[in-house]
Amino acid sequence: MELNYYSTFIQVADDCPVVSSVVPAERGGKKSIAVIQYELLSEHPYEYTQEDVLFETFARHKAVPEADRSAQRAEFFSRSQACLRASPLPKSYGWGLHFDDEGKVALCPVESEAYRRFVEQPTGGLKLLMAMRSRRV
Image (spheres, helix red, strand yellow):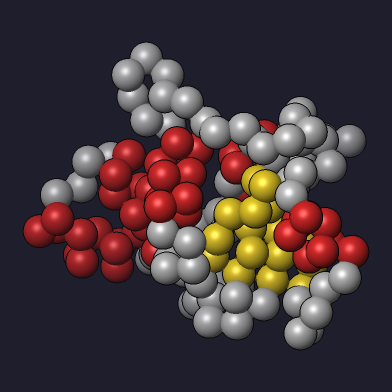
């Protein structure tokens, strides 16, 4: 089962607490899921698919050794995984996620002109999705 999005833009959640994007910070000297995902996507725009980001986040967060990653990846995806709509980046930190037609993802700050264009004038069959809310209605 493939988890990747193609030609899709994930908007920030409608209950996102910030009006402009915020870079997540480490807490207690440990990198959170948000920090790991931010580092991956800010340093490598349009290089990773959603599946790559999800697994690499897990592997870094759990300190999975390089030698074990191939086997761990198969095991990781043998279970159901939440997609990036549930990521803290669009839910809490104000980052939209743009997936190109190859399924590669990049960050898009909510206050940017690019974000506005994606939302107001989607082109090329771009599908718009909302990030999941942090709280129930």
